[in-house]
Length: 260
Image 1 (spheres, rainbow, N blue to C red):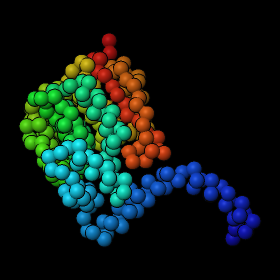
Image 2: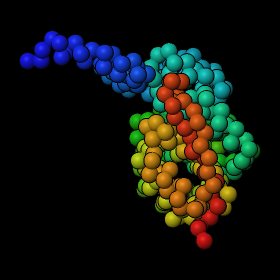
Image 3: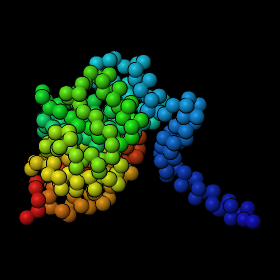
Image 4: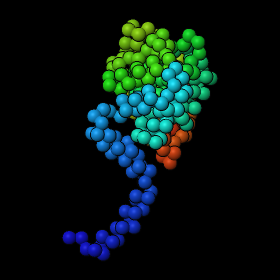
């Protein structure tokens, strides 16, 4: 048995721990506990619940209003790991500056960033977006079409990225991507970047933007980018989407070609 004196001595430590990491505890509560409770009560996944909210409250054919409605849901109802407005402004600005004719997104999720990219593209450009989870892809498909984008602008590809990337040229007609947005499993960032290199899908000057490189983090990806000599890179310091107190960042890369 632990004596009362020892137990009391741990109280300040526990209190300090909770206070210091309170934002992470809140994230766990909103992202995990609330989701599981609502999954049990409703019998449908949170992504579908979010879409029903968007369908009820957003204006069809208005991409920006659809994104704002998603933000309202994520702030006030349930947490969704969408890109969010702060990071969305960075992505939107880079798309406008780069004006890419071909964009590849890895990690469609609910289609939030997909809609943001699509509404920022120049005339005649095309977005290829890849989602491995068929259930989430179904939600994303509905969100993309609700925003008013057809197959000529956005092609949704369902399957694991490591299987899709080698088939992009022959099966989907994507010869090279002027802009790549990485927002899928962080442990896959490095593998998939190297796959893009190996299959000659990155032209010189191509831009790659990778989300969540600080939290939850992609250390091997960042280490490779810094050391390989193939990229110019910078870090956009941000907060985690919908959690301003949790630090995060987006890595912006420019492909300069093979190291000499």
